[in-house]
Image 1 (spheres, one colour):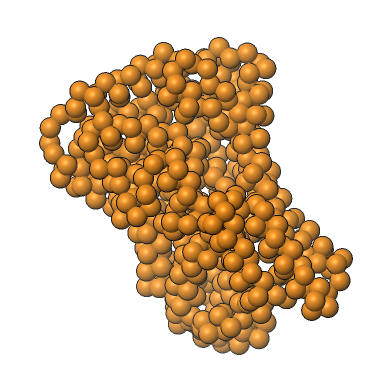
Image 2 (tube, helix red, strand yellow):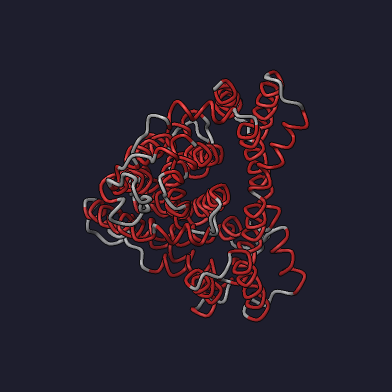
Length: 471
């Protein structure tokens, strides 16, 4: 418990008070955990071994993050991302702005991740909202909600990649498992946003709003070849997900297809294509808004994320290898006798971790390590319980004003957390939906495996078998 509270204190001070990135606080957290372990009698070699084992658990995630960096850069250069943005902006109106902003950032977020979507198309939507005289809190809430769908449903984003790696399941399998729930919640959000839009007035788009949208569409059409053919890499990626091609080969295939399209459709030379995958795109279209939107991607863009993943997993490895993790979770999990209570506690803990550890990654990793064995003991598959963990730990971070995710969104969009929070519907409706469905329908949906012969099996709320409890 001391190691956890120390990390929480250091993270809060450095991130909230000093405005630091979370990497250095995680270094301090690792040092504190190592010091406590050595004080309890563990040697440095044992502590180091724990760190290595923790990092090894995340090696596939690290490779996937590198692939995602390459994918983002090449998909921008090939016109895939610009085409998605173009089609989204083509159907915008004051009444449809909120649902279009939600769906538009959702689509871009699938490729660029939540931060990438907010920092690109999200900025454009905020500017359009201002021109349309739409309350910026509403606009930012819809943008953030759409962006954070990717943290649940996209295998291209770092949150699901980390969660799947720690849980020991395939990221495609994890993202597919809860897609029906994601779809239902998203449809609900679209309906609510549409209703909100009808309350904003029924007039036509203002002259300023129409001009801004028109300028952006013209800039996209002038700078890129826009058309369905540029979406081939995205379609191929979706097919790969459906037919269960492993993540890394799927990403690399998407990168190669985008490289070919960048050369053939957009006229990029070979060196530019390679650099887009390595260091990202440096957009020089001559349109400031596009150059701001599309100067991103590449492996180098992912290095800060890779660093935090390595440090988080090193910290978790120390706790797990030295028994500190067990002392933290035993008082909690020993009282959770049913799947329903375990699922509800896991969802609640994810939000609490995002409050105490103001960053998404330690919240995800710690939640997985704390509750994973308890779920496995109740015969819950990894692709199920990893989704339960991620339903809260992965997306409630943006609702906490001092969390790094919220700080980023406030900085990028220029809207205070308290203003956008009520309108970021997906970020609190989805965790609530997952918790409710798990408690009421877990067994009926096959989330809980059948008990061995002779053991109790009373459904979603069944008790843990005695042998598993002793383990």
